[in-house]
Amino acid sequence: MADAKSKADGLIHDNAVMIFSKTWCSHCAHSKKILTAKQKEYEAKGTPFSLDVYELDQASDGDDIQDFLKEKTSKRTVPRIFVAEKELGGRDNLDEVVATKGPKGFDEYWLKNAVHYTATGTTLPGFLSESEA
Image 1 (cartoon, rainbow, N blue to C red):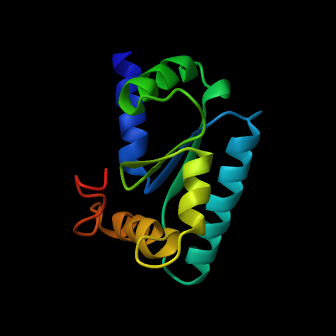
Image 2: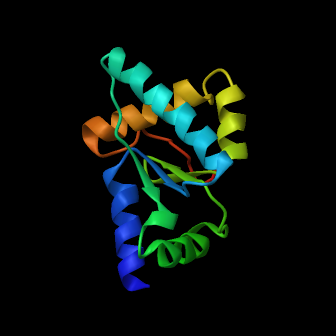
C-alpha cells in the first residue's frame, strides 16, 4: 500500500488535473471528454495545464491505488478527479462545477488554478480554503 500511496500522491502532485479512471466506465469517459476538451481549449489560448489519466483497470497496482484513494477521499468510485492537488470529486461533481458560472465556476476557479499550478507548482491564494473544503 505504501507504493500505491507514493505513486498516487506523485501523480496528483505532478499534474494540475489528474483523473483516476477505468477504461470501461461511462462516467470516466464523460469526465475525460470534458477535461481533455478544456485542456485543448486552454492550450489553444496559450494557457495550458497538465492533465493525466491513470487507468486503474489496466495497471497492476490499480486495486491498491483505488484502495488508497478510498482512504484519501472516502470514496472508491471512479472517476476520482483532482485539480491542483485538491479533490474535485467524481462525474457528478465535475458536471456541477462545469454548470457553475462566475467566480466559483469551472473556468474562473478550478481551471484558473490548474493553469497557475502548471506554471508555478502552487495554487492561487484562497483556492479551496478550509471553509470550502
